Length: 256
Image (tube, rainbow, N blue to C red):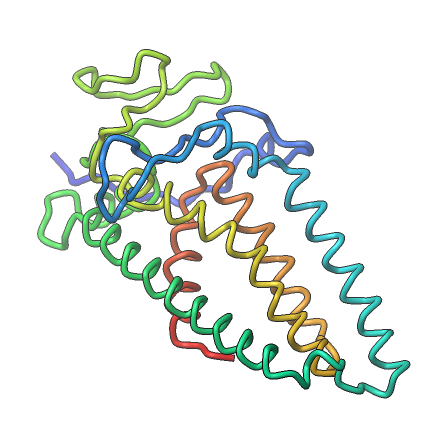
């Protein structure tokens, strides 16, 4: 019997529509344990309320408009520092802002390293590359090739091939399952990392307060990051763990 194989195919074009489907809602992280992967419970309604598309779209549009207007203001004032930027309070705030973001990003990075280590199936397993792809590309259910719980958009139901795997009474994946990225930390830390993208626009305000121009790249980065994190967390998209893992690691080493 040959080993499992990996095949690369294009996604179905049915997935590319606007607005996207409302189902399934994002699943909150495990709530019955106080560990690094899920330190405390998050209310399910709150969890999904901030993942409504209007939240990132409205914030991103207001952010872009605000940066455009403030860039014009600074230009009309010959890029003079704002009076608040000359105060001691401002300098203390900038130091605290950078320190808090660095510490928070480092904690998130550590949590994601832990998640990756728990999901990683190892090189010396019988399923080869297929086992690694299955581990990191299927977010729900217990570990093991063929044991993932996936959502069928056609039937609007969560499905699993292994009949021995139990679902929750409401038909969703079991929140106590271990070995998949969502329950191993992404559901909790990814959600807070998504929220942190709104706070990070303070970086832009600091630049503007110093009388400088906020470059297009920075504006694109902040708006794009919040939209990307929203899409990844709202639809529990597997690649989003890479964004959280890499971005938190980079930010933990940056002090602007």
